[in-house]
Image 1 (spheres, rainbow, N blue to C red):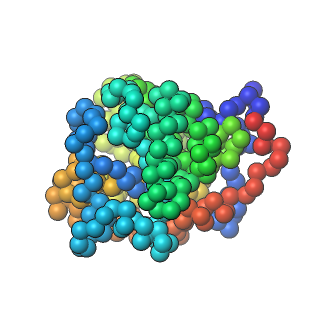
Image 2: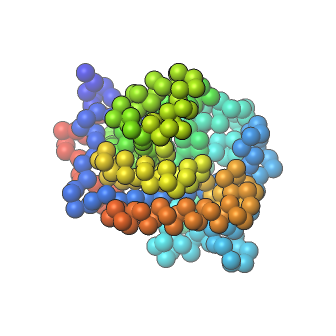
Image 3: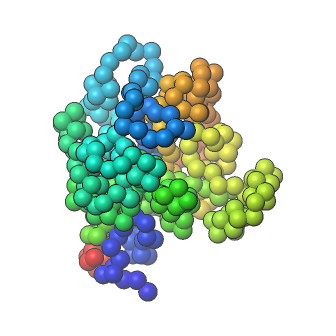
Length: 327
């Protein structure tokens, strides 16, 4: 059996039982939304360093005149309406020392020194623009690796939200997150980093079989699709991208039943402006996107699930017992 002394806290390994975070009962069940704010690029084309824009950020302040992205988000941060974290796409993030290809699109797969240098370059740029270093992180493409937690701790991050529980990207050179928790836990060699996984529910009449049954059916060809269409067994992440509002509300209920305390939603910033992602191609899609949120937020309110900020979450996490702090 693993002990804290032999577990390095990396984000590709399941946490030890003592690393799980027990939020106080008064915290209730809350939700957070992380927007992966990124450049526009063709999701179906090979990766490249050039030819990207950030015009879709205008969609983050719909109806306003053109303004710079940094100025817009800086005002939100100053007003306490949003937090700024770090989101790293290695193919456009300096230093540009690696080949640009699918495998290297996962920053955690790069040599440790390269990952560290890219992370520091991003932190410095954010500090230059917003006056403080970020303390929350998500790797682009969820691409953490065996060194990521240690590097995030060293860079001063307090929270990571790169782990996409119940997903496996190993077939495309990425990380395998199967079997990892839905609730937050301590990570990193000194366990000073909070991991808040993205929320993904197993839904349907066979959901009692959990992730193990879902994974088993994926190897059975057409059966997996048939079970999903029959609403017998599906995997549903909390995102408006490719997920219907009905699926999302069912997933919320399943996660609450499962005992998940922080429902972690996400989407990509280019989706806010038509024409940049497959999910919002025109104005009708954008109207539907906001309609999705109307339904989902109403459902959360009915279930008594309220929003929580980054600071509120971190403040609610109890101090770790000293016996668990040795790595």
